[in-house]
Length: 530
Image 1 (cartoon, rainbow, N blue to C red):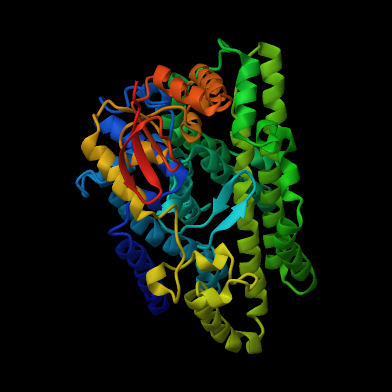
Image 2: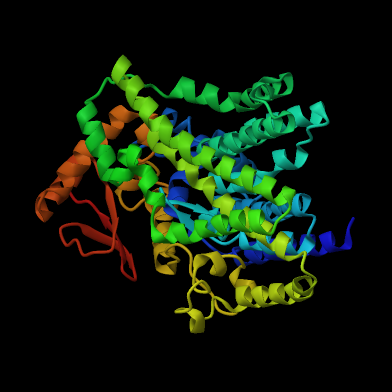
C-alpha cells in the first residue's frame, strides 16, 4: 500500500476514535430530535409492549416504512452495547467516520491522482454545511448520525467499483448503488441519479451519439440498480396507502403546520437555492468552469461538462417531480405525498462545490511553485481545524462556521462546542422516569421523553412527523387534538390532558394544579391528578 495512504488511514482512525471515546459517557440529551424518533422505533421492535398509547408508536405498522436498513443496523450494534442505543449509535458513528473519510479520500484520489488534494478535500467534506430543506451535508458527533449520514459515508462505494471495461464490476456497482439506497431512500435517489447520469453521460461522450445511451450495458445497469432497490419498494408499497380516506384539507393544514411553505408547496423549493449564501458556494463551480476553459486541458473541460451536467440533473428532475405528482393526484383523486420529500434530493448538489475545489486545486498543482507551497497550506488548514473551536474565533467568518468546527471531535481540538441539549439535569429526570413510572404510563412531554424516558408520549409535534406518510389518518387526528389543546387556556388545557388519558407531565414550567414528583434544575415531573 502507498505509504501516504497509510497516513490517511491513521488520521481517519484517530478522528473516529476521538469521537467514540468522547461519547462513552453521553446520554440521550446529546442527540438530535430526529434520533428521538428513531431510537424508540428500535425499542418498540425489541419490546412490542412499549409505547402502547404513543402518538406514532402505538402501532409499529405506522413506521414499518421508515429506513429498515438503518433501524436494523442500529439494532444489530445494540447487541454489543447491552441494548444501550446511545452507545450503539456511538459504534455506528465510529464506523461511519472511518468509512466517510477513507471512501471519499480514495474516490478523490482515484479521480485526481493527487494525495494532497484528495486529503484536503476529504477533510473539508466532513464539516457540516446547512442546505435547503432542513438538510445538511457532513459528518460530526452523535447528533448528526442520521440515516442520510450513513448513506453519505458509503456513497462513494459504487463509483469506486465502477469499471466500464469490466461488465461484472459495472453491474456489481449498479446493484450496490441500488442496495445502498435502502439506508436513506431520499438521499439514495440522489446517489442513483448521479450514478445513472454518470454512466449515461460517459456512454454519450464515448460514442458521440444519443443512441449510445440505450446500449445493453446501460439497460442492464438499470435493472441491477432496481434489484438493489427492491427491499425499500416492497416495504413502502406494503405499508403506505395513497387513498384519501380522510379530510384532505385538514391534512394539508397539518402539513403546513409542520413545514414552511417551500416544503408543503414544493413547486417553490428551487427558490431556496437562489440566495447570496448558496450563490457564494456555487461561484466556486463557476470559477472552475472558467478556469478549465481558459487554463485547463481537455480533461479539465471534460470534468466541467460532467460537473455541470450532473448538477443540472440533480436540480431539474426533483423539481419536475413535484409537478408530475400534482398532475397524477388531480387526475386520479389520490394523495401521493412524496414530492415534499423528493425535492430534498437536491441536497447532493453540494458535492459539485467539493469536486470543483478538488479540480481547481488539481489545475493549480501543475504549477511547481504551488506544488511546493500546498503542503504548508494544508498544514495551516489543519491548525485552523484544531484551534477553530476556541472562543477567540467565535466572530471569525468561515472559521466559526460548522464547516470548520464540526470536522474534528472536541478531544482533538483546542476548545469545544456542545451538541443537542446536553443537560445532566434532564438526564437525571429521564432516569427517574424509567425507574419510577409504570411501563404503560402516558406522558405529555418533549420527544426526548419517548427516547430517554421510554414511555408513551402524546400531543407532541416531533413524533407526529412519523405519521405524515405512515398513517395520514392518524396524522389528521393528531392535528385536530394538538390544535385544540394549544388553543385552550391554562386550566382548561390541564383538564384536556386529564381527559386525554395523560398520567404524567415532563416540563420545565410550574404546574401547581398537578402533583410534583421530581425536579432537577428546571425540569420537573408531575403526576396528573384527577
